[in-house]
Image 1 (cartoon, one colour):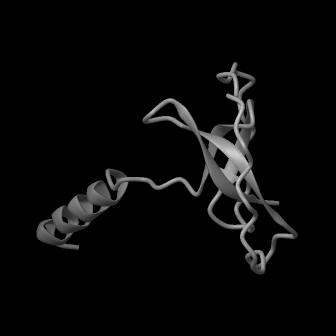
Image 2: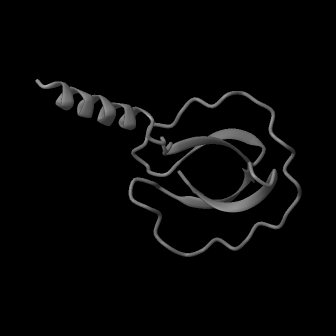
Length: 96
């Protein structure tokens, strides 16, 4: 193998290693408890650390939207999820 080909492969490999990773499951505070939230029902949820979550403020639960849950889930419900950017709870649809 020529040195130019080796250099090209080394650069390609280095670029793959430095590519930004996108996690499909993340740990977030949901209704005051740390829980995994996944993009897909086939993703393996991580074990979330036992960290303290902010107290959930009292709030009126929004009306549950009608619809069929995504494939691989049995039901969805409106839950309060802590937004790490604003540090405030927001109502989100969470599927089990």
